Image (cartoon, rainbow, N blue to C red; front, side):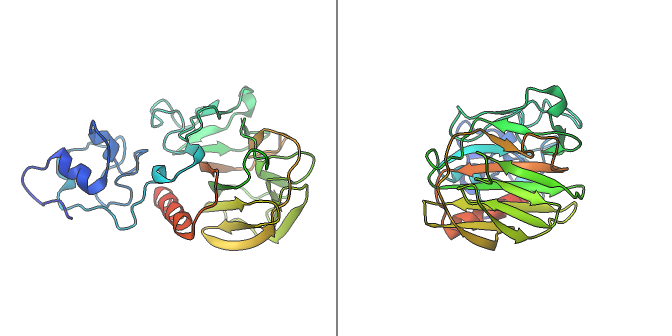
Length: 288
C-alpha cells in the first residue's frame, strides 16, 4: 500500500508497510540505516539529517527493497554502515580502524588489526586500504572442514592501478586456496581449494563499485565466481588442507589493494539464484 499523503500517520502503519520490530524507532527507517527497511525509497533521508514522520507521506516500500538481514546463515557480515557497531557514529574521515563489527550470527568471529601502522582508515561507509601493508585479519577459517559450502561477497572500489599482486581475500595454506588474487590489474587468480587456481583475464575499473561473489561447494562440485551478478567462470571445488585465519586486502606482506572495502558477507551455504540476485540488488542500492 501507499501511505496517505496527509493527516496523521502512526508508527504501526509505517511498520506494516516497511517492516520492523517492536519497540519501533524512527532511527531504524533512515534510508541508509543498518536495518535497510527503506533502502531505495526516494525522499527518505539518510542518517544525520532531520527526520520527521511526515517524510513518509505518499511513500511505499520499494519493489526492489530487500533486507540482507533476512538471509539465513550469514556467519560474518561487515556492514559499511555499521563498522563500529554504532552506525559509524564514533568514526570520522581518516579514523584508523582497529576492528570491524560483525553483524552476522557467529559472534565468535572477529576481524581486527592490532598493528597501528597496518590499520585501514575510515572513509564514507567503508574502510580504505592504501599504502603499505594495510589489512584486516579475521579468525574465520574458510577451510573445507569448517565451511563445506559457502558464499563470500565483497563490495569494493579500486582507487589506484597497480602492477603487482594484490589479495582481495586470502586464506592461504601454502598455495592459492580459498583466495582471490588480483594480478597486476589484468588477471584474477581464483583459488579453488587445493593449492591450485583458475586464471581469468579481468581488470577492475577505477573508482567504480564492484560486487564480487564466489560460491564454494563440496569436493568435486561446481563453484561459481561472479562480478556484479554476472557469471565470470565456474571451477571444480577441491579439498583444502590445513587451517588458517583469513586476511582481507593483503596476503600479510607489504601490499594493500589500494581501494575501499564497503561490505563483506560470508554465508555458510549455497544460495538460490533469487537469493543471490536479491543480495546483489540490495548491495547495489546501498553502494550505487
